[in-house]
Image: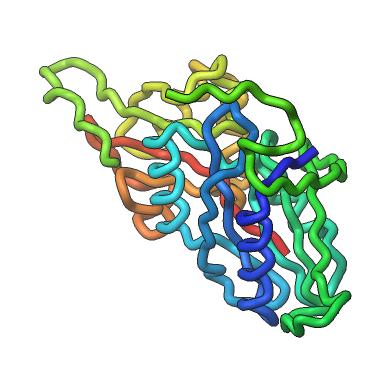
Amino acid sequence: MLRIDRASYDAIVAHARRDHPDEACGVVAGPEGSDRPERFIPMLNAARSPTFYEFDSGDLLRLYREMDDRDEVPVVVYHSHTATEAYPSRTDISYASEPFAHYVLVSTREHGEQTGLAGDDVELRSFRIVDGQVTEEDVDVVESYLFGHTPTTVVYD
Amino acid sequence: MLREASPTPTEGTTMAIEVRIPTILRTHTGGNKIVSGSGSTLSALVDDIDGQHPGIKGRLVTDEGKLHRFVNVYVNDEDVRFTGALDTELKDGDSVTILPAVAGG
């Protein structure tokens, strides 16, 4: 299951809508081992295409160095599909190489533009992609990680 | 952050080049993020690393002897696609970073 805070969820959706009809892409980084997406990092789609996305090679290096310095990993790797459903394409599967990441797909095929009307939500789904195997997972959106669904002990320091 | 260069080599020693390994290839390196190898070109370095960590070359280089399009390899800050790919020359203290491309359709 992907557990993600509302702010990150909304930021992914907003990015996908903004870049429609091109595909949008990015990551939400989080502390290594936490499985908690915390830091939203929209990336430039170097392909600037409605059917393909690719992080620029220099951006990719800077992103991974920065995450490495902060002991972060890409907890979520997201991108949008602008004409098809929010399900990994064959190309997505062939490139997927973060076995611990949640691959989030957003489809803007129906609702690229935000209308403010009921029912204009975009489709957002999450998957694991490991060794070419795609497994869909539930998405649990929490208002914040501190006051999420799971009871936690809050330690004030 | 740029990695610190290694100390100046003394005559007769082999070159030490730090290679940063992405998560997906760490099954070949016993979980290590960084390995060390030697070679005067990227091609020679990959052979040397493969000798220590069998199987890693097949993940980087195609049967035709070219770099896989799914991986990006950098020498220091430079993507080797722009510096001669596997023929890129290396010197002692260089830092090589391997990253899977993040791309799709």
